[in-house]
Image 1: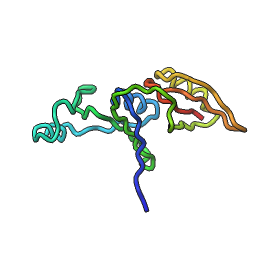
Image 2: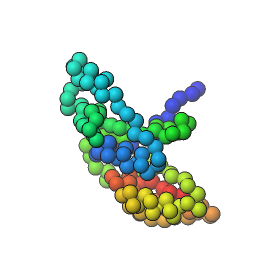
Image 3: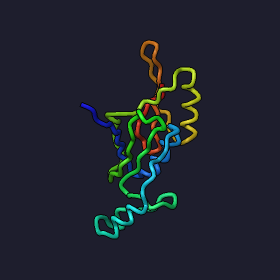
Length: 141
């Protein structure tokens, strides 16, 4: 059996968070088809309230996705939810850069708006847990 895997992250502002993660990972925000969105609204299949403008483009308000330049990696979708994050993630992303690049990567991500939360180690493995601008934890190893 084969299937595609997509990681979904809940967010209060999915377009802004997709922009942040695209910058953090060197990925691209998936373009949304403005003509298709306009046709769906005109046909009554969607309403104006289902859309918004982000960076000048007409987009679906409920979400934005990022994709890796490497086609083997899963797509990450950021979807709008009404409630803020209140507890620790049950699933998180690991950004694996290796020990030689870890400190520089942590500094770069903090400069982009991440917050360093704590550091851990187990045997020879060391990592830092950070939070993205909306509080979602992720690790840098």
